[in-house]
Image (cartoon, rainbow, N blue to C red; front, side):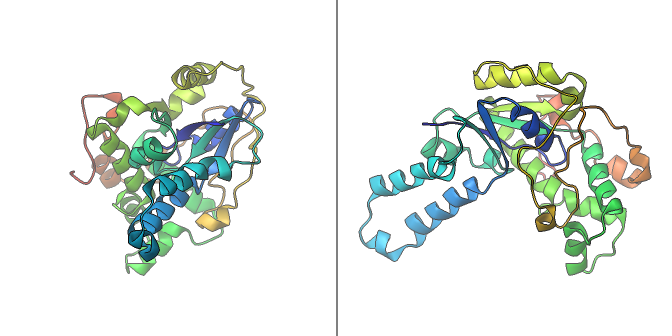
Amino acid sequence: MKQFYFMSGLPRSGSTLLTALLNQNPNIHASTNSPLLDTIHYTEEYLLKNSEQYKANPKPERAHKVLSSIPNNYYFNTPENIIVDKSRGWVNQIEHIKDYITKEPKIICPVRDIHDIISSFLYLIQKSNTTSFIDKGLIEKNIPITNDNRADYLMSSEGSIGLSYHALSEAYRKGNDKYLLLVDYDDLIKNSQQELNKIYDFLEIPKFTHNFDSVKTKEDEDDSVYQLEDMHTVRDKVEKIYRDNTKFLSKYILNKYKNMEFWKNRTQKYSIFGL
């Protein structure tokens, strides 16, 4: 049987880099963005709530067996026994992990300064040759395409950053932070082996010495699916790239989304949506 661990956290915070590094370890398979959580969630939704046949003759033990078999079946041809499955939703679906995978969830959560995340998205949009999912969202709402509006959309309740931030802060509010290990992007870049050692200690598996000068992704992702080029491209060498956020973020945005890094002050537990 395989050992399952999870990766969630905030977008543009180093999760692709982290999976590439973890995949240097021959005992680990760290996935790209994975459909595993959705497969479990929607199978459960149909079987237990929407199937007339199941309602007419429910078999809870059989249903649980089917749902619990999904993770190992999904990774049936993955030779590594340690799986790190990546999905932004895991922090919001810890009960699914407990019900069908393991009673002791361990979720690695990359995080990053919010201004840096927004700026990273806007930088990708600037260099992209396609209309991003962000701009398409604004167009659908008849909102003018500006960097301020892009930032607000990303931080909204339906935006990539807002959804992930809300899920992570909710996990803290509910007391589920004991299942999480937050990995700050800047720490990962500055003290890479040290941060990976913390991950190994958290997962309770043997440490591995990594190569930070030759980093390759194990599996490629087609970023055209996400409608934004180079979202999951990693550089060969782990190093800090300094970007002037003021080139992308106005004073309005810098002020509106300042001091949101609650993981730097663990007593601060809140959501941008006021929940």
